[in-house]
Length: 332
Image (cartoon, rainbow, N blue to C red):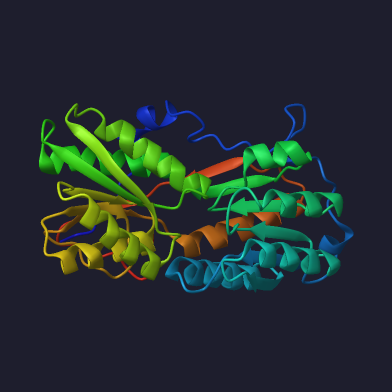
């Protein structure tokens, strides 16, 4: 079956109506231009092969493997020396890596936080050193940046709210607008983008007055954790018939748990790569993290070249349905 690309135009109106969704506050004051905090271009950007520092949470999630590839391949094309640091899902470790990176005087830092709130300290430290920060995928906490007087130049990521809307609407399309729905969530509440996905899904599914949200568990964006907490959630909720898994590892873990249980529970969510959709796994939406890495490199290049850059770039998602399979780089 031919892959279907979803532009999310139909979801746009609902997504924009969600509080804080589709509008990431970079922390820049309203009277500054598109240079984020107004930081001047570091001297280190003016030499040959300037250093671009990249901070990623882990390489156990295929999402970040693909993103690293995008940063490195496009960085070479754009004349950057790219240094990637992997935090192994530890906030303190990521902060320490950022502090060490700052001592290397990079031209810019691309930051995909482990978690949203702690990463504000990284942005603040970079701002103090006069280093521009480009935030990708997991958003830095807006409240955290405000409290520290910190700001990023740009946020680039998926239209997360739009993805949640599309999945909610697909549930109603597949199962019925007046069906008895008992829904569970496998989520990651410490990440702003995941909260956006969940909230948008709830609002879309809420068009069915019989939809009930029975339980929420934290999969921590980890396959093994998601498998365990989904198994526990299923045991405690015998009426549950739908699961929304809002990250790729959560989706794969939820599917394994559902199939092990032998129950007829439908799974929707953000795609696990190379995992075929079937009678249990009915639909998912995918990001393209390798492309995100490439785009951030291009944005950094434009910025240090004196061009204005957008404060926020939201990329459309691809939707997949039963009978289709996301490619290796198409990841939730």
